[in-house]
Image 1 (tube, protein in one colour):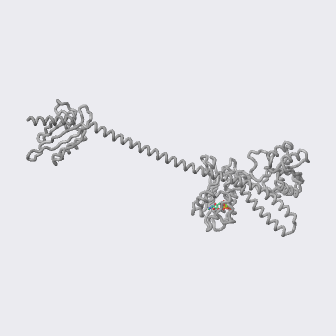
Image 2: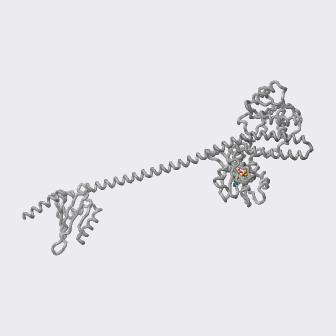
Length: 544
Ligand SMILES: Nc1ncnc2c1ncn2[C@@H]1O[C@H](COP(=O)(O)OP(=O)(O)OP(=O)(O)O)[C@@H](O)[C@H]1O
Ligand SMILES: [Mg+2]
């Protein structure tokens, strides 16, 4: 008995040290016996009764099924009972219990009762839960941070590519600007030289009389010079320094007027379709230059379709809603020329408007067609847009701003009067040009027309003539001269002689906008008959 009591005490001590509750459940009677610690685990005081029904109702409803199943499994298979579940205390608080038990059988092997221990594992479960939550939060933070980093990276990549694109565009436009200035300068000087060559050849032609061989040679030289002049005109157009005659132009009429000529230029293998809606507003443009542009676009389309096809010429009104890099907001009429030709690859499309860029065989293309149209478009404050797909075709669009005025019906130009009449009888003309070569050839032309010419090679010299020389009827002056330019000279000359008729000769749009001098202009290079007709116009206007 003593040994037994001793054993019982040691067991009690061990249970208390392990904070374990002890219990027994009798299977036949469903009587539950629990130690004080065991009751405490379920939140019950030592004095309180704690039956099997009390136990069941103290288990969290969501865990009951699991608990019952575990009990049955142990009874049926004899395996150890081991489970963790939530308990609900009287104050409603939730705790965790861990229960372990074994099946106790009698000597015949019949299951009699479950005997086991219970422990409060709330603190452990809480710690595990906290850990889990912390992990979740950490994981979430890592995911968020990763996403932020990915987004930041993507943004940087977008910015880099936008920047690269902008830089490329800037480089391209700076390049075009530089080429423009260079070609403009060269073309200007060439224009002056050609002017002297053509002027002198014209005069010479008159002097050789009936010598047909000499005449042929001179004609050849003149033809060459004319081609050179048209080349410099295209270069000046590209560099946006062309002398434009901007007026309201009705494009449908302009295109219709060109149709015959376009058909002849593209040949019979190619159809031309037009879509020219009526009621389009007039545009601010130089009609001759737009005609030239249209002809160039049609020829490009023809060259892209060696086996024939259709060229579609269309007009439509379009608005640039927002100010873009190329267009200011406003209303435009778009002249488009579309072909079904071989198209352009990206590289060609990028370079197409560069002067002298041509994929055509040597001698076939100068590579100035699109450059000229591009320069013209910009000078008109519009734009040239090119769309092209290899193997499908190309569409070129010339955007021209709508004119605030309506187009005037083109009146047949008065035939220039090259003879000396009442107003243009022999006059005394002051000719001012810093370029001796040009001055010489112009003086020859004027004298040949029967005029008396006074020559000056600078603004100062010209003013000197006006002040102290014989009275002159007309002054013809170059614009860009070192020292005093043509504009300043005209102002100073008007101070001396307020009604003096003046003609300013210039090879390109060098006259600054807003130069309101009320003077007639003469485009360089000019022929003798052009010179005569401009003189007649100015003098007629002066006597009106
Ligand atoms: N409609 C088009 N279809 C396919 N390629 C085109 C078309 N228009 C222009 N191109 C390409 O652009 C290049 C430049 O055209 P651009 O009109 O400036 O010069 P070009 O036609 O070669 O010579 P030019 O017009 O001075 O006689 C052409 O050589 C061609 O490669
Ligand atoms: Mg061309």
